Image: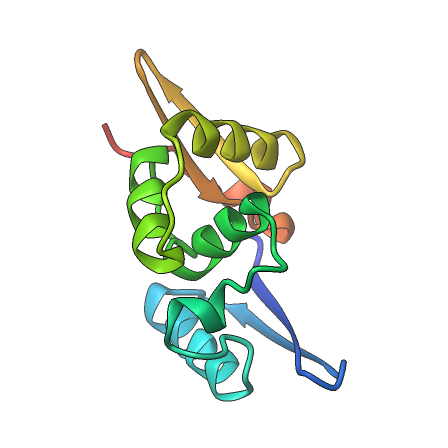
Length: 138
């Protein structure tokens, strides 16, 4: 079995880049530890919606940020992203808009898309371990 690898790039307010790489047995617990480190470095600033999702970001960027922050390892639907987006950004967004943005992210290779009869689920793409990706449970 090939080694699993997770890489996180963080930029601080000065433009400095921090790269954290986790190789070996990547578990949910170890991935969450890495995300805690990212938060300590300032990669996830602020607690309020205004600090996280400033007005200078487009809705597309905000949707992507919601996905990266709240669904780093799990499969999710457009409805779940819509719900979190509206709570975090404190603004309404249409389900069709979220679906379109998620589809575009999948087309660009940022997400994996799994389609069942009337349900589409997404997951963040792990670029270094494409062969290890499993389909979602039904």
